[in-house]
Length: 293
Length: 214
Image (cartoon, rainbow over all chains, first blue to last red; front, side, top):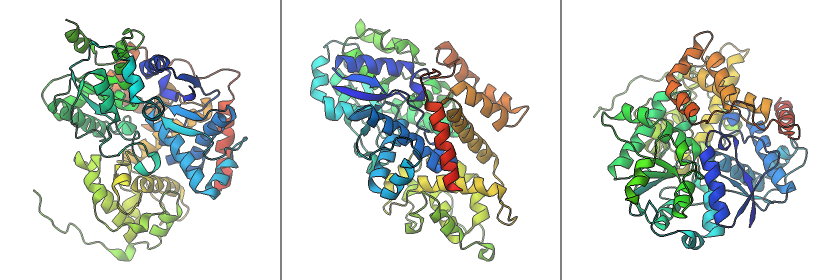
């Protein structure tokens, strides 16, 4: 199976371990990720706030490129990117005037719905299937029996009417992934609460409080590691963990934060280096060592 | 628990009844008038939860009442983290996150309004957030993709105000050092190859979008 791959700006450097592990895992699952040629930034939420139309234009350009390069599915790993791609496609399908307006900005027009943009979790659920992932998992991996929580963040499931992926209140697919690896998913009330990463450089206290509450809640339900699928969430939950915990409580604790692809890779017996586990801010060494002995 | 009290009597003689129409005309604000003040958005908002001065329901009510200055000059509209939880929970499909974006755009546009009565002044957080958004989109204009050190550096220098703005960067020193340690900072412009035309194409799109909106 060959699918288009839209990395987004942060995947090449800021979240290189996510990029690397996704490639390794998809290779094992027999999915070929072909990077979209000549892609540009999706604009995230920032460009919309400055210029509404230009923001839609630059997203539509990526979709038009995917159409030109004959991809049926366009995968984004960053939820903000996947949200922008899905939302623009959705708008163009449902509003013809809007579609004409956006197409007038582009050199090669985009035919709405000719590409199906989606987040990588959706590809895993609907096109690869949990059964196929189960086949590749090797028993006796270091995560077996560990307690874990899945953290979705915002754009994997919300806004529900546009993304149409999972129940926006209680999505469960990442819990299934935890189960497949042999770890025990815990019920996590703050699964879809925002970590506030979009305001990271503007309002630090807000982000730290939101993130701290999530981490505190994860600790309370007994999580030994957190599973997520967004590099911005990782930046605040993982990279800012110490400060965030400091802001909401006096206690000290550490929870390793892993990408879902890293966890699947560990389950498939891939070596640590190729999954980029050394690049996580909170070192998962302790978590992985305990199981081996 | 705090008791409910009338904080301030609202003087509607200075209100602008056309303000709500202005918001409805802005892309994203179309569903504003459907709001029936059930407060679902406020109850589900993570920022309100964390105890910050932010109340989506109140903002919508203020817009509907026409409290132009109070809304556009408040810090509140810049507090939103854009998580779409309110949009998802709303029984009336008001899409508050998009309304916030529309309000921000109106607030920024009106800083240069020739009509002195309608001119607004951005609060401090608003200035910062707007500056961040602007640097972000400029970075895309320059490189076709965002280049973090470049736009964040410029944001600290200009957005936070010269010459001491850059010192704010020290607040983030642990994050920056952490990224340096893990080799996560890009030192060269991303995707800078002669065969990539993305930056040129993006500039064209920006230009066309601007000329259409004028």
